[in-house]
Image 1 (cartoon, rainbow, N blue to C red):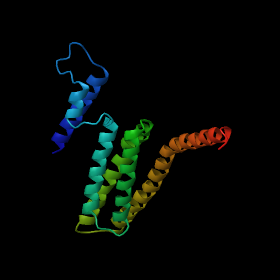
Image 2 (image 1 turned 135 degrees about the horizontal axis):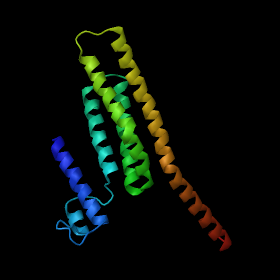
Image 3 (image 1 turned 90 degrees about the horizontal axis):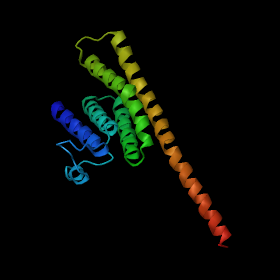
Image 4 (image 1 turned 90 degrees about the vertical axis):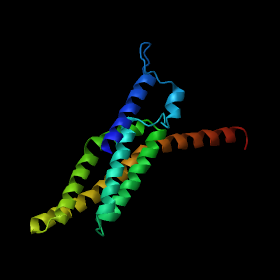
Length: 178
């Protein structure tokens, strides 16, 4: 299954490159129509695809982990990341934030969640393992707070643009006597 996902990502990368940097001698030249007909969105960059893949991994953990604190935190993380992806599909500047999140935050969180499952499934537990499991729960909750803040920051430019448009429209209406 992972091989199929990698093939799809590679195909999208090839099509993105060929679409954005066409060469006359390219025998696999994909037109814009080919790109759309293969159910690929123009806005699906590798960063977005990587984020969606990480969302799937976190969703798997959400299904496997039954903890009163961690399970809702994972659900919240999934929801926040989906919002970030949606924003980034419409606003390219969001991809820079996602790229940073994908470089370190999510791989580290996924690594910790793998360890958390290992600790929970280990037949003999000690105080150190339980302490580490609790620290993983705490850091996932803290990561959610950071992701929420990043999501707000991503939308900040949009808010500024909308507020500017509101001010301009108000001024035009006032000038026109309305």
